[in-house]
Image 1 (cartoon, helix red, strand yellow):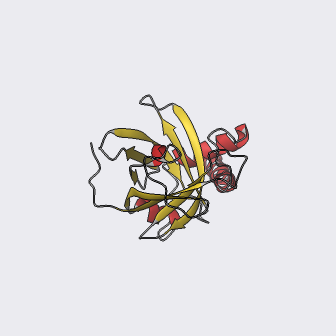
Image 2 (cartoon, one colour):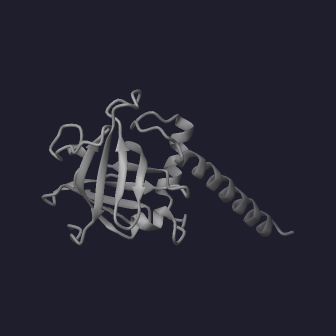
Length: 183
């Protein structure tokens, strides 16, 4: 075996091992923006910043990226409707555009920029990770949320005001929109 062949095999093995770590890190149920360990954060960063990882057709990630989403309602832990202006949900309201390359942009309902960065959804579709970045590409925050519903008619994720109290939560409900992504 030549040195070049050996290098290619080692590189392939390294990519495979990284992919296994990425999938494990992305399935975290931590819903805080700072509750991941540094090892998990490093692995998750690789997941949401790597554009070399293809999104498998028919996967939850492919579905999420195939639709432009608008926040249309929210409910509390008792199933009651919560106004989108409520302090517990207003930060999650807007238009979301998840791109197949692992990047996203979000806008407020008045089309002003909200945030942008990287995103990922593991193969099991149980969580969504976003890494919001500033204009220089530096991480501002990271958020892992449980996905409650993801189909072609609805994308709902759950947020907890206090990550240590799972009895109080809000489900942020999005539906498809034809709203064109602002530039």
